[in-house]
Every structure is written in C-alpha cells, then in structure tokens.
Image (cartoon, rainbow, N blue to C red; front, side, top):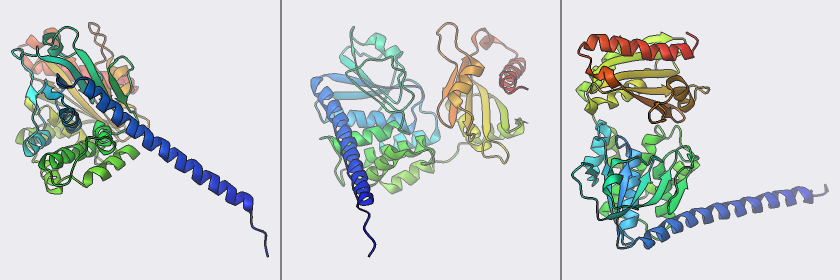
Length: 377
C-alpha cells in the first residue's frame, strides 16, 4: 500500500483555512463600512443634507445619489439631490422618467440656508456653486467614489475604492451589509435596486469591465430589480440629432494607424452626449482601437470623447499629457479611466467669433494636430 502524503493534506487544509479567514475578514470589512456610514448619518439626524452630482448626471451618479438619500432618510436625515448640468443623454432621461428619480436642478435662486452638510458621490470634485449659498461652515459629510483617489478631501465618512467599476456597487454593499436594507416587493426598493443595477451595467460597459465587487453587487440587486424596467431604460431610442452627429462623425473621420479622429462641428448642449455615442460606435471599426471625437458645444467650449480598446493607452494620462491644464485654474482639460475619457476646453475670446466656418477650421486643425503630434505625426 502506498503511504499517504500527510504533508500535502496539511498544506491543502492550511490553504482552505487561510481562504476562510480572508473571506471572513473581507465580510467584516464590508459590514464595518456600512456601519460607519450609518453611524455618520445618525450624528446628523434631524438635519438637512444635499447630495451633489458633478457634471451631466449619468446612471452611476444618479443611482448612487438615490441610494445615499435612501439610507439617510431611513436614519432621520432629510436628503435632497442637486445636479448642475442637464440630464442630456436619452438613456439617462429614460432612467429618471421611468423610475421617477427625484432630483433638483440647481439655480441661483435656491435657498440653501437650511442645509448644514453635503455629500459627494461618484466624484471627488468640491467646487460647486451651491456651496456659496449654504451656511458658513457647512460640513462635507461624505465622499464615496470609485475613481482614482485624489487624497485631497476630508469628510466625516470616506470610501474611495479604485477596485470598483461603479460607485453604485459600493452603495449596493452598504444596503446588503447595513441595517438599512431593501425588501422584496416594495415599490421604492424595486426602483432603487433597478437604478443601481443599471448604474453598474452602464459604468462597466455591460459588465465587460466589471470587477469582483460589481458582480457581487449585481447578484444582490437582481433579487429586487425589475428586469422589464431595465430593458425599457437600456433600449431608449437614439434621437434624430444624435444620428446626425454620428453621420457627421462618419463623414469627417480621419484614420491614423489604429486611431480614428473626427470633428462633428457645432453641437447643442442638450445633444452633447451624441459625441460620446459616436465615439462608442467608431471605436468598433475594424483595425481601430482608439476613437477621439470632438465638437464645439453651445459656441462656448470644445467637448471631446475618447474610447479605446487598446491595452497600452491610458485615457487619463494620455489626455492630460496631450491637452495640458488650464493656466488659470490649474485643472486638466481632460481625464478618464480604463477605456474612456473626455475633455472640455473653453473657447475663451474665440467664442465671439462671427465666422463659424473659420472658427471650426481653427478648432478642428488645432485639436487634431495636438493628438497627431503626440503620436509622432
């Protein structure tokens, strides 16, 4: 009879125990974060809080802000969501309308004197005009984000996870492991879980870029989410103006190696998401792994979108190195994440140019030359 290898068995047992301990530690950490957020809310019970959405609201920021309000409202804090730029993408408008998301567009006439604190979701920017209308010393309550940690903000609660594909995934964990959770069949809970699921799907490119936390969150949310609502939101029609932008992008495309560039001319602010949709489409062309599409929005600024399937192009560092920073504010003109990025450059004194054809020629040549120069062209 061959002798059993007891040392191999002990190694296997040791590995299994280590795995179990690691899983227990991760589980405890998730519960700890949910507990810390709820404890922070309890300290502000009876007060009024704002959640700020940076830029044009997208599914991840909308759903995260909603989840933040849901948790706070259940712990005695009145929370309202404020956004500063229009909900421009058709799919995002469908999300807000279908699920009845309550958000307030910011205006200079708003009275914010009763709000003692504010929260940031899906961003680490802290330069909102609404802060000037809040009481002096208004507290930064929380920062929850999945982008690169900038390490600049101090809040009562901070949770920045670069290993998450969406901020919605982080909020789904709070709901799963905290005392404020969702129940089957409750209308608001169904709508919130549907929004969070869509937020994850959107920010991970239909789960192609999903990480472990995103899959776990989606699995949890599937128990409550409404699949019919998800289909309605995801299948929102493409507007005629977006189709026009796509047509312009195809007509003016310029290919250099595996890059495709295209300028789409003048675009209304309400149609600006068409630029990103054109980039999503053109990057799929055979032989192309990076698409850069841009246009002039509302005669005020140059807006562009980058999409890439390249394993060597980092949208964030690429756009920052090519376009540089605004000398007045010190902020980069562009930035991004794994497979996508964007940029905005004010036209400044050129915004008053009456010769639109000349203005576009100047902008188009300048933007293309900057990118081509960085590629050695």
